[in-house]
Amino acid sequence: MVVRRRPIKVNEAISRVMAFAKAGPVEHVPIEQSYGRFLGEDLIADHHVPPFDRSPYDGFAIRSIDTAEGSRTNPIVLQVVGEIGAGSVFSETVLENQAVRIMTGAQIPDGCDAVVMLEVVKEVMIDNKPHIVLKRKVKENDNISFAGEDTKKGTIITKKGTYINPGVVAVLATFGYKYVPVSVKPKVGIIATGSELLEVDEPLQPGKIRNSNAYMIYSQVVRAGAVPIYFGQFCDDLDTCFDQVQDALEKVDILITTGGVSVGDYDFLPAIYEKLAANVLFNKIAMRPGSVTTVAEKAGKLLFGLSGNPSACYVGFELYTRPIIRQYINAFHPFLKKEKAILGKDFAKANPFDRFVRGRLSFQDGKLIATPVGLDKSNVVSSLAEANVLIVLPGGTRGYKQGMEVAILLLEDQEGTTLDAFVNTEINSRRSSRHVE
Ligand SMILES: Nc1nc2c(c(=O)[nH]1)N[C@H]1C(S)=C(S)[C@@H](COP(=O)(O)OP(=O)(O)OC[C@H]3O[C@@H](n4cnc5c(N)ncnc54)[C@H](O)[C@@H]3O)O[C@H]1N2
Ligand code: MOO
Ligand SMILES: [Mg+2]
Image 1 (cartoon, protein in one colour):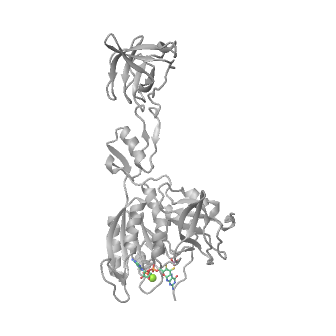
Image 2: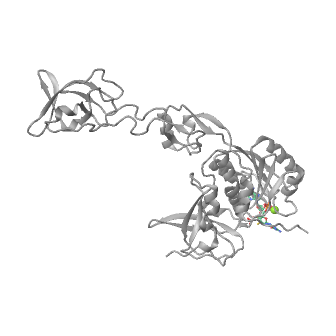
Image 3: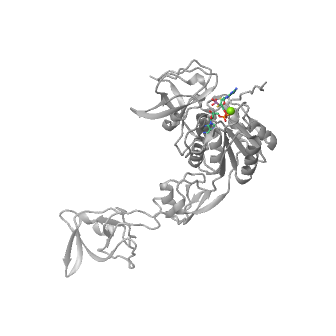
């Protein structure tokens, strides 16, 4: 008889896995390749931004004191003694009743303390020399973009663990990072098991299906920020699978297998862990889908035995493998972003296990609505294509009604959630799932 497995709670499984989380090293990549990576060091401003006082407009740099008596009835006349575009510097000091024609981005000349826009002055020639006429008083510091007003030298602009988006790239370039320190991506091996599996380009045959999990996980690994290494698909044969797992484990930081983790005659992963003398952290979790998710550890490396059932495989990865990857790349918030939303339709199925229901997030009148999509079975693949959230429905109930407040996990988000916030959110417990009108 098969030994009955004892399910552990999701949070317990998370804490057992996270006990083996480690941070990876830092490498330098060309700035063009930094988008989508995680910053490997705090970024400290080594100069002011902007580095000098500059003009935010095309106009004239002046000395405000010269305009003290200026008005409609008392126009001020200033002699234009030079002109500078962005990138040029006026080398002399501007004297009484003088002005310099200046373009946006150019450094304010010595002696000047304000800028007037081209539109507010009249340009005239007096004695064949250019002058401007100004019918108003200008205050000191008017229209000056000051050195350091964007960023002061010495401030931490972007912290280690920040996801590098195009805005961060702009800051990196501003501070001269031709090469950017980023966290090294872990190498994640993928092995698909199952004698029923066809290659993706093979025609269907009786009793066989195409291997979708390998490619699904491949892209989940990329989305999580790691490098996938696909070792191929193997039939349910203990020796073949053992050799593959042992060999792959040498070459990667993390190893994922799909299929063969349950109690069936051809489910060889439990025997493989035993033969490897790996430490099995758990082999049953009180969750659906993904209850058979098994995690083992060998010499500090984690082996994720994800289910063969596509949706179970997907959810097992997002809950347990993704945070390990995100921790490795030093992301601040390694867990999927957790939010509250309103359940978009009834979910009536009772289950003693916590459910992670594939859902689609929409916005209605400023509220977040999460609606279950497709058939919610662990062997279903099509609903995964529609899902952009997992709706967390704690177990032990008769079901959930449309309009209830539920927790959701955002699948496409980059910001994430900390371990504490992930496991301690009040909506993690059934009691607080209240009805929202
Ligand atoms: N007697 C019991 N039977 C099962 C239990 C149980 O507790 N007692 N658990 C069920 C649950 S829950 C799940 S989930 C599955 C897990 O099965 P395995 O992880 O062992 O996976 P397989 O048996 O290899 O395959 C299951 C299913 O998935 C299909 N599959 C496998 N690999 C792929 C792939 N790469 N791409 C697409 N589909 C794949 C496979 O054909 C099977 O249909 O066990 C239940 N049984
Ligand atoms: O591991 Mo299974 O997904 O609970 O159906
Ligand atoms: Mg099986």
